[in-house]
Amino acid sequence: MAKENTTIYIILGLLNHEDLSGYDIKKRADYMIGSFWEIGYGQIYPTLAKLEQEGLVTKRVSEESKGPERNLYAITGAGREVLTQWLKVPEQKEYTKYEILLKLFFGSLVPVEESTKRIDAFKVRHTENLKMIEMFKANLQRVMGEDQDHLFFYITVLFGERIYNAYLEWADEALKLLQETPEKGQEPS
Amino acid sequence: MAKENTTIYIILGLLNHEDLSGYDIKKRADYMIGSFWEIGYGQIYPTLAKLEQEGLVTKRVSEESKGPERNLYAITGAGREVLTQWLKVPEQKEYTKYEILLKLFFGSLVPVEESTKRIDAFKVRHTENLKMIEMFKANLQRVMGEDQDHLFFYITVLFGERIYNAYLEWADEALKLLQETPEKGQEPS
DNA sequence: GCCCCTTATATCAAAATGATATGCGGATTA
DNA sequence: TAATCCGCATATCATTTTGATATAAGGGGC
Image (cartoon, rainbow over all chains, first blue to last red; front, side):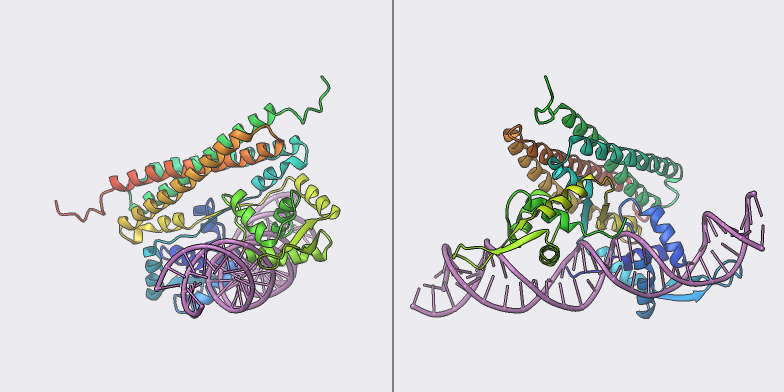
């Protein structure tokens, strides 16, 4: 498994639906895959240049005279081929990085309140994320069946729902454990 | 929030318990935080050099004459200070990257079996991870209460348990949805 | 007319990824 | 006994990703 630029496939996958600019790609990606894969301009623009050079996408300047100049990209046959090949390879990158768990892991160095505050903030953040996901889910359920793309989108939304719920359940469990723990026996009795 | 080398704090956190070599750090990290934060030699050795240069750790060559030469690192007072400061800052990096969801998202381009095979492999992988986590949990429950470090370790283990369970539940839900879906209406009737 | 926001492209240093190179010592195997 | 393989241990490198910043045009509000 060589070190592989995954951004390539995200861009090709999005362009497979419609022609987009780099800016559009960022917005689409944030909206549609943002809950499980983040992407920045620092990856998008260089990768678009690379894809164009390799003949997997073509670039044209948008004609609309209003607003700033837009470079619109379109996928080519070769690009579609590369995308399909990638989809047939089973291997998959998967990584998670939770700084909160790192800080909790080393949490015995600081007062317990630091840890509970951290978990509280985590809860707030993911309660918000869960709310968003539930909105997506409700919207999707209304249009499901129109085409099979929606089913795949729906499946990724269900993933988000499960994960955010797991986060919140864990947070409550962790807070309860921290509350039960006597503060190193330093309290006056 | 500047671009921050998190590896620094992992190393300092581990060295805070005992002196370790780069190789030890890798093994400890894999074992203890590997389920939510991965780290490679490519980060460890350069970061150790940087930490030494900044006076946050000191290096000495291990005396044991058996086996290859070992560089043992110890945390300094300044290092402990940096670690504690980091633990007091609430902000936290958090990202997840699931290539499987990317491939499912664009899954309408390939036969449904590709997607189900992918999810099956995902299940196998995480069933294994869950089994490992349950072992950790059982071991920890036996030694809990001995010192408060175990509680924090336990809390991170509970996180893994929740997450892996969520993965498996989602996988079954997704497989069910894919099975229910007619294959683009191409079957003879 | 001025300020702020959104659109839009682009670049850069720092950090992380993932693979590979090198070598020692001990155990297994031919 | 020699050959081979594995675990320990340090290290580096190209590629990719991160996260911040630079630049600029156009539209809306005041």
